[in-house]
Length: 221
Image (cartoon, rainbow, N blue to C red; front, side, top):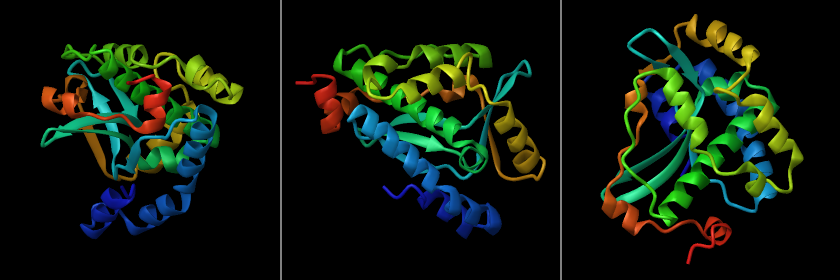
């Protein structure tokens, strides 16, 4: 999968300014570099990923809101299960290399945890959440053990602990995103906590075959 297809389509529809598009293209190497570090540290291939051409904000009915910089996004289509990571332009453009590495590693742990649950037949229907706080709590509860995945990288383990506690902690990134993206009226998508739940068909789960390096890691037979 070409990770730039969605943002290319957004440019062709004049949904995203050309100067922002060019800046994303100039900066996307940082994502490739982070993925290379993650794969080297884990010996597991990173899942497919793509640049979603909008900032994402999770907004609850009571007024709580949180910027979502990336998401692990499993979904079913024609009884095939796809595992993808969405990466937003603000993360690519405004995050430090350390924050970007931590975020990409965080989504990687979601991916491994999801597949591990498939292996153990412990995927169940998710309860809907109505608050941002509950959604963040659930997010942090659905991660695979970082010590097992990143045995060879003290740096990645340190960054995960430093950057994530009750969500992503990076005031500098939030400030840049607000001033350089939101205040300039660039594309934004608003989602609700209950709308951030993936619904997956049972047949697609039964048809799922894990990627070989992850299969070996999980002892999937």
